Length: 238
Picture 1 (cartoon, helix red, strand yellow):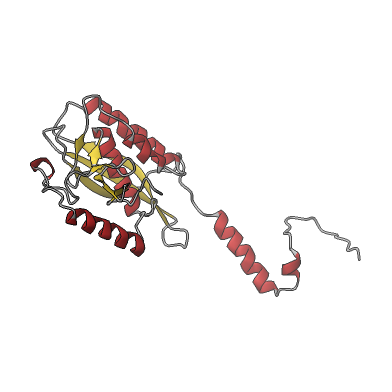
Picture 2: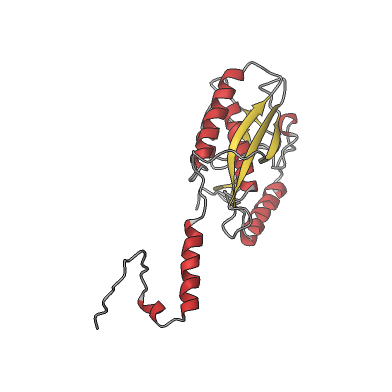
């Protein structure tokens, strides 16, 4: 049946088959939901900096520098108070009494902050920074984790912060994997492993453990003819 429209059309809406049988109030509610989603603010480079930002400061002490580095990462809250509320990194600052690395640290923080403000998935920064190696060699942190450079240490801090705000999920081991690794450690200790050397007195893993290629921790031991990491569970035997 054709209907003649005698007035000027100022707006229109498309109603699907499911909405034809719904009451008018429910159709309006559906339209409001669509409008609500369209008003969601996403991270982008033109987003203005608020007067106040939430942030966290991390202290980094390495054998490469006499003074500690203080890494501050500030976050912006998007769509605050709504179901679409998100906390995203907005800028990073690094401060230290040591001025030896001042120029490249300032450049690095500006580039990282620019990537943060672009939006999208910024977690790739962690692996990019971790893959930077110092030609003079790296060092082991407390617990036996290897840091190839000071830049990689900054990447580690960013990883810690992104896990804090929920952008990176923790790769926790399940109960079965934990029991398996505990059994492996007990078997290794029972086999007569030597006491940890002075160099590795601060490590919680057995002496003689090798460096794991996956988590960069000296926790790889050989049991039953198979190399197994006691820290992340990585195994050469699958």
